[in-house]
Amino acid sequence: MWKLLTTAALGTVLMAGTVAAQSCAEGKTLTEGKLTIATGNPAYYPWAIDDTPENGQGFEPAVAYALALEMGFAREDVVWTRTSFDQAIQPGTKDFDVNMQQFSITPARDKIVDFSEPYYTAPMAVLVRGGDGIEPNLAALKALKWGVVATTTALPVVMQTIAPTSSPLVYDDTANVAEAMKAGQIDAALFDLPTALYLSAVVLEGGQVLGQFAADESDNPDHFGMIMTEGNPLKECVDAALGRLKKDGSLAGIEAEWLQEATGVPLIQ
Image 1 (spheres, helix red, strand yellow):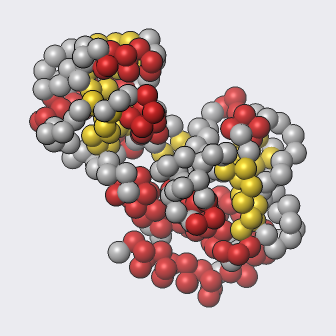
Image 2 (image 1 turned 30 degrees about the vertical axis):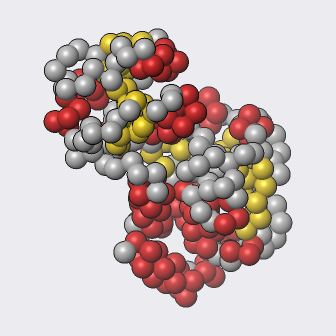
Image 3 (image 1 turned 135 degrees about the vertical axis):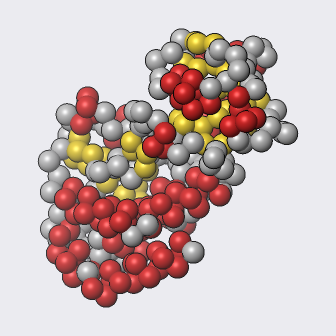
């Protein structure tokens, strides 16, 4: 249904708002008439599919093309480039208009680059090992032995939302939680979804992301923003376009398609 909504919304924009959108971005991009978007090298699943953002598949390429269209750029006017994570957040000139590769918006980074308004708020997700047979619901989660990183917001979510029958074990960092899970000391851990996906795919053999909570159930979740050069006049156009995508439900639909349905990480009710 969201695809119908997206098509209808974007069609409306093209008919009624393209002139205004183009005028906002006019003269503010690296190349007139083009929108240059950077991503990581490589760009990982599920943020991009097959390390090919040009195909529009994966969460961030899908957001990028929706944003470009909302700003008045046709699909063929989107130009992709690559940077490392560290290169993107350095001060100075950039070879991109916007850069998307899961940049958390932090006060320190915001002093040297411009961030767009958030296009994604990372929810907390449940990581288990060999989780077949465990249902992604609160009743099943209460019976598990939990581990959390002390410095994250996972502990209050475990204690207040899940309320397990046994007290969670607290660790210094993510690596120690993963080792505890490998050793069978804990059954489950709570991380932000990007970290949980990475641990399940790369670090923890047999790891599985069982489910995710709605982002508004975390007190201080990570917000992802697009990076631009400090003081970039394009920021007002990007923020306005993102605002429209949020308002018409397009952004939520893209998130549901690529970070819930494609990954098979359901919402925990």
